[in-house]
Amino acid sequence: MTGQSNGYGSLPLISIDIETASEGERARRYTDSKTYKLGNVKDPEKKAKKLEEKQEAARQTHALHWFTGKVISVAITDVFEQAEPTRVFYGRNEKIVLTDLAEHISRDIKLIGKSNVTFDIGFLVGRYMHHSIPVPRALKHWNQILDVDKFFSPSQSSSQRGSLSDYLHGINWESKPLDGASVPGMYNEILALESMGKHNEAEKLWNTIKDYNAFDAEAVAELARRYYGSPI
Image 1 (cartoon, rainbow, N blue to C red):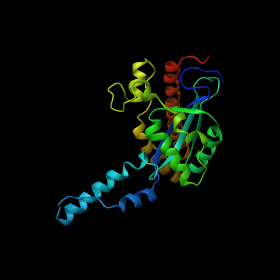
Image 2 (cartoon, one colour):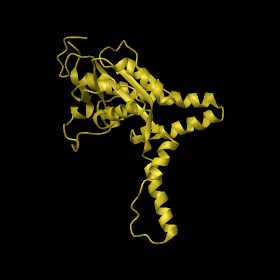
Image 3 (cartoon, helix red, strand yellow):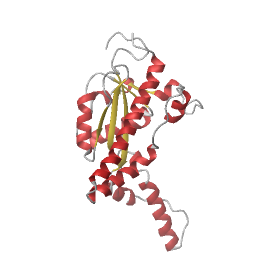
Image 4 (cartoon, rainbow, N blue to C red):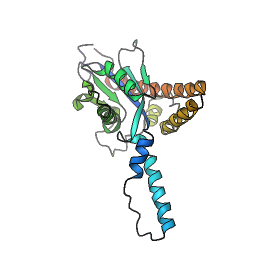
């Protein structure tokens, strides 16, 4: 696609969204081994309880950091080439997910997302490095990475910025089908179901995650179309 003059240049504009979960036991061992400030607690039982609370709080954030989390699903969709289907790469084997994704973004494109700059892109870069996979070209050029939050203000503290749900409500679009915070727990449930041989039930949960992931990428694409207008 060439000749666009909408404010983002002439490269194809691809909406991207990721879903993450804890890396599992490896992450747990790492955060449990860290030193935590426990204040002036002297009683051994209270001290042990406070330490467990700190460790559990750290476990709950595993999916938020590339060094303790993993990518379980990635959705991409072309903002203006709407005839192209939304693609979702997902599964337990993160290396395969990232390799499949790389085949589609190792080219000259611009990426757009929600919290792209502060979360998705850095998380992906870290996970590619974890697996010793070359980081795709599109993830290396920060000047080609766009974020819908900046449509409403360059300032992270602006009252005009909100969640993706806020933005969709504002443009009278359909509501998000799921709370993203529930995805790590759903992934743990998938692992449990698969370990019990309940693959059909696990696949239903996978489909829920995939559909939610695709919805977010498509919602970002809709915001981008309304902001930039139709390509020239």
